[in-house]
Image (cartoon, rainbow, N blue to C red):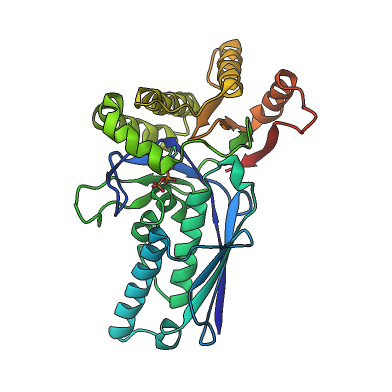
Length: 338
Ligand code: 2P0
């Protein structure tokens, strides 16, 4: 029996991925860029055991057995095993024993999956990394993680990460790449404000498919807006220019939600609490005459707030004043250094 355990953190996109040009290989219509959280924060932990006593591959997610035959899960398993066989035939370390064994996979998130916080990104990144460790596979793995869930390829690296859309039909150049390491901008902080822990009504995979089919704004965004925005975002990160980073982050989130509204039938991810948070952030920034905090929303109503360390306590107080803790709990989760 051989066993490995690994963790992978959630990532939050500041230039959003929305839309595929190839559904099977998960090739996007635009490049995207994200910030990966620290390993000890919102993360997935996966343990994989391989044993000659196992009669079939099996998987448990948060303690409940799930379908191992899910096509995306099978893609990841198949691709890592293919690389392991290639490695074996090229005379590298002998992993022949465990390659013939079945695996049992246990994966848990340390955050509520229902809150809709990029659980598939951390989950597939962790699965692919753990499988690679089990079989002794090294090298570029983001191409495989991408085939589990698009955003997962960005969680294969820490810090600031871009996912290059690539041009090739086979997806070999659609890879994640670190832009700056996690040590680059130590003052940057992320807060997560839970506006609703309900499960989202329209999943990302189905939602982006309808957007590609029906939204002219999405096409315009992918072709004419994102290329320039990626370059500006990378520059603002390299310069640690929060004014520019924050503005680009908010504009990109807003444009993503505009494409959701432009989708037919329209998709609404933001709720009234999200809208109040947006107004609060703009009022706060207007008070100081500069961008001190920035919001970003994914395929759900929960807000991700980016700010710098000296602003955290004051902004948290402002949020608490605007959203007094309800009887069912505090809407504010925690301030996370990235
Ligand atoms: C992102 N999202 O860039 C964007 C922003 C949601 C909004 O990546 O079909 O779960 O598995 O490739 O990766 C959500 O999409 O979709 C997502 P699939 P995924 O983070």
